[in-house]
Image (spheres, rainbow, N blue to C red):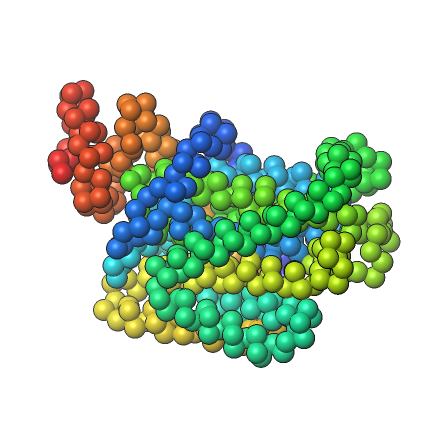
Length: 508
């Protein structure tokens, strides 16, 4: 067995049905135990989207949202949706919606924990699973394992995979040689990431809404053109999802499995990625960014993935494979699974421009994912070397490596690199899902404290001791410096109730 086969085997084991079931079970567990905040608190999600402080150490709440969404919205929103339809039929889309709804609660927990145990490193807020694993579970080896998985997936293999997709799509659509695209992408990538977290956040703040809104608008135009087919399209999705459609009855199980699988891979809820972007935001309470990140899961799947599905299904530009051989539906003879379905759907709107539109969409989707990878990688390099006096130099070297890997990835695809990236992401998911389940108590406490303060008529401010959370002393300084008014109001209520928290001076 060579290295390619070995990495492929390990990747397959990590991304087995067991991981899919764990993602699903974790989402259901947190949804129930938190009393479905993804429904109860949706107004708060939207409200906090534009809140937070763009301070010298942190980014705004919206910028944290944009960076995480940039990581969630990627190639899978185009090719992944097509793959789900190809193997699971139209019903797979419904199960993608289900996993997004359920997964939002997991996204809340991991993001709130990342905020609660974030740190200031080299003048910037950093955090994520490695940080809350060490501080919450008191296990540095466990935390190091997660950090190394991120560095493998997002640092040394992920950039090349994303860059290759950009370069390959531009060659097919515009005839531009990969080396030219590679140079352009690497230089732009380097310019943004060497500007630090602030420049990445500002770029994401502009690019992510632009790409998401633009993509959704095109899908809506296609819906309007095919408006008479829309009722039948949704009927097909629901009937196929519940085994009520004879045509797709043979792949009912595949509809569930592929919908859940592609949904998990696309929205990344519970994998720990979005939590690392969440930790960089300056907010008064971890629950605020937790709710914002829960909303980002909705945007990824319920809006962007659905936009792709609508384009494909409303135009009928898809194939569905039969496990027994041949096709159940073959509307596109000779077109393989992947971006080809979306290209053909766009061609019905603008003939001959499907590949060009998809190439541009892939550029934005993949490039913003690249930026998120830079944030994730540096956050974990910071975790490992935060006490090293040469940390800033190490961080610059890592950024340079990221740029180099981006260039080389654009001109050469490697199946081993794809396998290693999948191994890294799979390890991240396993480790983080286990961690957040073990940290259920403090995760729940953040939402309980947030809702209790809201009932008091307060704008919630976080005091770790109120939630029984230790090793989060940075919040004492954050509350006193940035939220003195909220802190004073909370302190007044605490004093009137006669409740005291030992050794904590709440006065600003």
